[in-house]
Length: 367
Image (cartoon, rainbow, N blue to C red; front, side, top):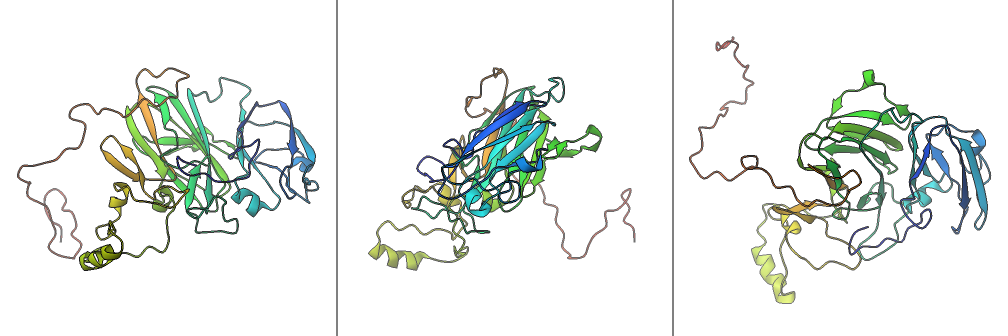
């Protein structure tokens, strides 16, 4: 999941998320599924139009695939778009263990919806206690590992883009909650769902797109603004790792005497939380085995205090077509970066009354 943390998951072809299947509209595919789990399984082809018997709902479409057996799925790809695959047998357990993947069907006509860069990831959530390796499969709400392609920040790769590229980002959600994915520095248009392509007349500009449970959204933008731009889920606790849900709030508390008492028994104890939690991003605290800090990652100007569903879109001049390597941090041109002010402050505008004040029209107050 990240440097210092390993999860023991179930997956496809030895990985979670499973390999992205790519094909072309109009092709006929044949997929062999060998079950090496300790229980039966099936594969549902989420969003694809296919025969009922190939839909992969165990017990409904076909019998569950027993352990050690191989089943074959075969169908025509009658539409293009972004789809997903996952079990439809003991679904809560098998998906909580990491069984999911993307199925991308490219348009037959290469002139239809072309892009220069095409990124795709699946949102997954896990409940893994620090020091353990296997997810709690019966969890429904209190997940603590929020992942893209089963990775967490700071080990999610940046999205590297050449300035001027037309960029598509495909994002599928197989967690138990929605995710408002927000990208800084740009507005974009949603061009595709797992139901198909969105007509141009039905699109509108966004800077965040809420991705419902069991859904996919693809959006596009023209990379015209150079820089390092954050992309993340806008639920704050989804950009944290191994978050404890029972942490008390110590903001404003005086823990100086308590700290002295604890240090008699535990030298080196660090009081935290009295001024917020940002100090967690700076301190190198001892943590349990096989976990990562709740707030982590460093940028060019200090700690990023992020985790989970967070990455950076890096737009640069001169990125080669097939180059996705990290170009490093962006050097903001002079005059384009916030800076410390040490002079006199201008007079503040403030309101001395709790009453609503109507803005006057033409400089004359109405009333």
